[in-house]
Structures are given as C-alpha cells and as structure tokens.
Image (tube, rainbow, N blue to C red; front, side, top):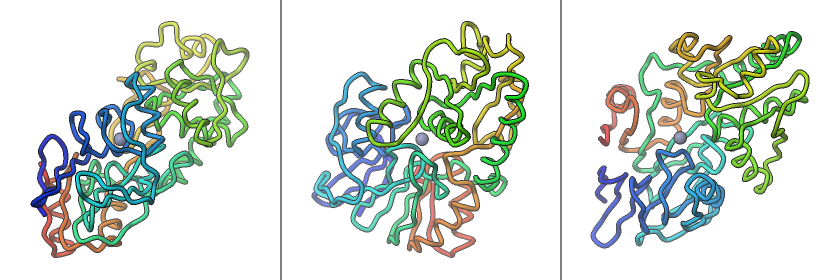
Length: 311
Ligand SMILES: [Zn+2]
C-alpha cells in the first residue's frame, strides 16, 4: 500500500485509491472536519461536518457518514472515529492505516475525545510536535478561565475572542456551565444552530446586549472592535480574552489588544502526541503538519520504528 502526499494524503494500491483531507473536491476523498483549510465538496465526511460545510461554503454537497459504520471509499474499507478536535471531527481508518486528522485526546464538551486505535501505520497530525510544545492540562485551563471570568464580571462585560467554529462553541459551552448565556456574532450564531440540530445543547444570545454581559466573537473582532460587541463592552469597563493553544508559547497582548489570554487548545500537545503513538502501537509512522520533521525524529528515537514527515 503506497502512502504519499498528492493533493491530500493519498493511499493507493493496485486497484484502489482514497485521498484523506483532499485539497480539492473529490469523490474518493474523506474530509476530516469543518475548518476552512480542510473543507471541500463532494467528499465523504460525518453528517455534522456536512452540515457545517453547508453553512460555511453555501452548499451542502458531499456524502454523510456516521462514526463507527464501515463505508467503501475508492475501493477501500473506511471507518470514522471521533477525533476530539471540533464538532463532527473524525479520524479515518483505511484498512490498517489510521489517519488522525487534527485531533485531541483530551477532547472537548462539544466534540467528544480521540481514543487510540491499534494500527499498522499511523499518520499523525503534529501541530505541536516540538518538544517545547507542552500544553497544560485542559482542566486547569478551564478552571483558570472560570475564575478569571467570575472576577471580571464584577466590574463589567467580558468578551472572548475564539475561532468561529469549534473554539467559539467550546467557550459558549463553558460559559453555559457557569450559568452565563453569551452574545455571539452572526456567523457564530449560524454555526451554533448546527450544533443544536445535532443535539449539542448550546445557549447563546443574538442581537444588542443589555446590562452586564458575556460575549464570544471571532479573533479578528478583538483587533478591530468597530461596531462590535467588544466596542460596547469597552464602553462599560469590560475586558477581553483570547483563546488559542499558541497562548502557551507566545504573547498576544499587543497584537490583539486583550486583557488576558488562555492556552485553550483543540490539538494534542507534545506529551499527548507521544502518548498517542505509544497506545496505537504502530509499526511505522508518518507525520503531517506543523513540526512534522521534528516529531518524526522523536518517534524514531523514542520507539525505534520507522517514521517520516509526509511533506
Ligand atoms: Zn482543524
């Protein structure tokens, strides 16, 4: 079975071919999740991702698949499992080859978590594949966000900047758990509606906020708060925070004009990546994205198995 990068992750043998996360629309493709750098039409994807594609690309065009049910794609037997990255995100098992896609073993309240699966070949996403990229435990970050939010709300509104699909809904869910119903922007609102359609209970407000409030906006709105929820919050002595895994390693205080930042990640950190490889117990590993070369070297040293970056 040949595995290479060609307009996506291409797995091929004599008569069969499948492309994972294809870069252009494909009838033999599998789209792992609804982030814009992964979405293409016509491919196989979870029903959740298909609905997200409908909102984000204006046309719901593709083949819906349920987690755990085998399908034939390009002649191969393919199974999807939760990836814990965002709502609807999936790992793909093609025969005995597992592709993680973007994944997170710690998962989230709106997307489940990624479990390890025994496989012969593991293709692993390595955004945080450098030794330095160690993330704090998610439960500690959640506790920090809750305590900070409670303190700030005593003085005025609180606005969170988070990527509009995935991260935004995770913070909405967290705020809901504190009894808060945040205001959201139009695009976040439309994506939240898909979550509720699939039974993920999110509560949010849409429109002009009254009195003290919480809000969730895309990160771009933190930089240019003209006419935004943040502008209104600022007038009322409000504060803002940015959520991203990269906050563990870089400061965004100047570029984002924020009061706080939290390393709230939807990817596996370095330690989770190592643990995941160990539990899947593969005979060979391919790495993709981010620190792919560095992590391949680490896998070879740590486990004594063949590992290389796919592109
Ligand atoms: Zn992603």
